[in-house]
Length: 363
Ligand SMILES: CCCCC/C=C/CC(=O)SCCNC(=O)CCNC(=O)[C@H](O)C(C)(C)COP(=O)(O)OP(=O)(O)OC[C@H]1O[C@@H](n2cnc3c(N)ncnc32)[C@H](O)[C@@H]1OP(=O)(O)O
Image 1 (tube, helix red, strand yellow):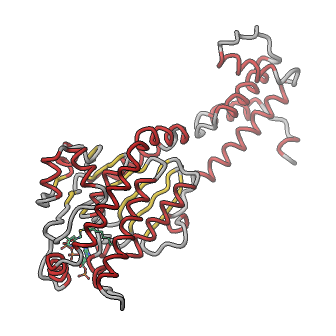
Image 2 (spheres, rainbow, N blue to C red):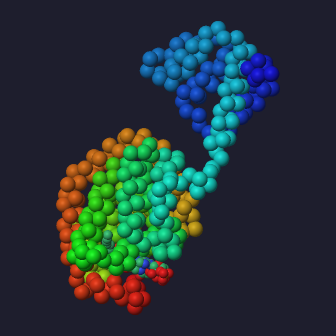
Image 3 (cartoon, rainbow, N blue to C red):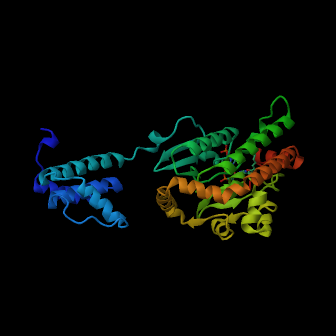
């Protein structure tokens, strides 16, 4: 016999009433339907005066109940039981979390990209190499950001897999010299760098860095272009550009002095001072630090709550905060990329990279 052909007993109705309290919030429209059916089932047709036009909530409830007209109490009780049973089964199936491997978007080799709970998560995924950023990874991050800017997620997160957030530019990127020579390599790398950083400057939705461990080089400098930076207490922030014969990128020559003042920025960007998470937070580069043991749990709980905020309002707020600086940031990015193009051809840079690759030097 079909469910609707059965008559719901008082016991079925009472069990639906207690079941409804355990359901995930079904949204206002369904809540109004439940309210109306409950009133109809227990009191019969609407019998109270219509609330005033400014009493919005009670008026919506009254309208929903009144719309049921002379529906018999028994039918209302049955409809209530059916509605709750439908909500319970859909909430059961949506609470079955698929393993991350099943949810990950195809087409990425160096990243794991997932979208759920209105959050697109871009996770750098070369843990054995401390998430060092290869040419392929720069390109995939750009692709993932472009896709995230158009998908239906409300916020986008960049994070790392394993013990590091990222060790920055993969230093072996400099070893793959094309037949056209080293100058051509420096030129194409500068274009890639400029395009990569432009993607962060132009990203239209709230962008959050979940810094799960140490961060080096370009993974630190671009943090000034994020809207929020959450760090594990284990994270460190290191920009050893002079040690590497290089100069700052990611618009950090502008964002860092603005965030932390010129003196603190110079210590990081010229002298390569490594900051702890607490220091980076005190200097305004990091929004909040969480104990490493509870980092993932606390951060994702927070982000899931934020992702429920109205997405268009968040976008517009970001635009209002950031848009007036965009042109300036693009010009700074181009200038920093040009300076690096020169630096990559210098002996200082070549020797530092060779020293790392031949295992003579680490940070
Ligand atoms: C298109 C071009 C754009 C360019 C933009 C410019 C950006 C500038 C920067 O980002 S500058 C920063 C560059 N990064 C570094 O200098 C970091 C170099 N790495 C280290 O010093 C160390 O690896 C470490 C301190 C990050 C970690 O040390 P640890 O001892 O814990 O681990 P290992 O050294 O054994 O590392 C494990 C393996 O990972 C490889 N690896 C780590 N980082 C990089 C890197 N940045 N580039 C290349 N490879 C890296 C490391 O070599 C080990 O590999 P192996 O297991 O095969 O030996």
